Length: 233
Image (cartoon, rainbow, N blue to C red):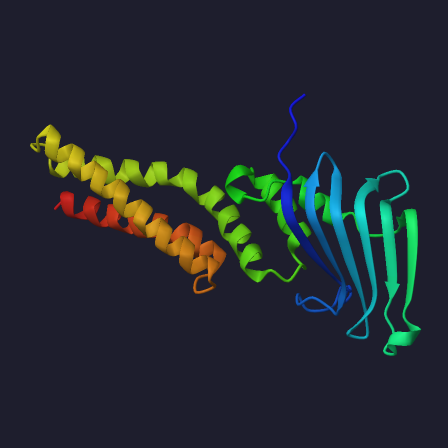
């Protein structure tokens, strides 16, 4: 049986829900989860930091953890709970050979799923986006929003290329094969250069995810229509 490679340094920040009528911004930080690696459904090197009123209230560490789907619990091995107190002498540490805690399954969902949006289909990317929506990593969230829109936009480039190609073919029907091939390569290169630029601007927030994904198609479509109008003059 082939062993899947381990995923390293998995992080997830959990925020308190602000309710249905609240803004899209996350609520107060509730917990921070960290695992050194994930392999064969096991998180290893676990640290969970609890927050109360903006301060660290408890730190849980464990050698490993698995998800108990039936009981909706974490099964921790070699666990330690540190109860944080402003007075150092009042801090309490508890050690457990095994421990069950009612923690979120989201950490395991993040670890299981593929992290690259290019490797996911639209449904998988949308599901993963829901998982990471409140983890505070705005760049990663924006990247997934842009990539999802690109998955919708990319198939339409076939229509745009067909329009541009047929128009150029009608206008430059006497062009030789070498120049025709060079022209095709130039058009494709221009499209991908434009796509790379709009993709980058979308991820950094200069363009909206929708515009970042559809801008190359829109500009190429405008260029194709312009050529079509001129070829008929």
